[in-house]
Length: 229
Image (cartoon, rainbow, N blue to C red):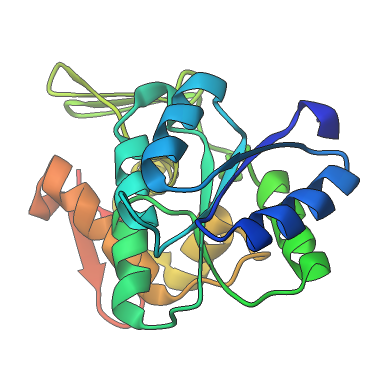
């Protein structure tokens, strides 16, 4: 992917931060868009469909977590990578971000070179899950998953899933009954470039259970998860 074709949306209510990050990303050859609050971010995301959104959490009018949730409700934006940028380190705010559909959480202050390295890692994984040995179309009972079109049909209804939920669902459903260990799930769905906690998996499993039923995903205590057809 040519850098000039990669659009990155920066969202922060502090002009100095926008200026510094924009300068460094432009110097790397990326096409940079900026917004100063969540409302503006949602509008720009709809209009330009960026590859990646780097968004502060604490902002006026609409914060980053709410904006992330709004963006994830828009089907054409489901593949966008969203990384939340914040000075806050509390677990509850991180969980709220993942609940809203964020792919990663970056704590500031962060050196521009480190941030650029992080962004490159996120963009390398934009194709998502390593689908080796997984069929293009998976059919299990009333559930149909088409990986090529990112389509999920359950009980005759089309469902729009955020990218990580889709990838986690595809992995678990690809081999019903197989117990996937937490480390394998993190590696194949999130990739080893980004450090996320095991609770991130729990959050996404909980969201999948709400959509497909509590009995569809079984917890194997101390090991991982499996899909029960």
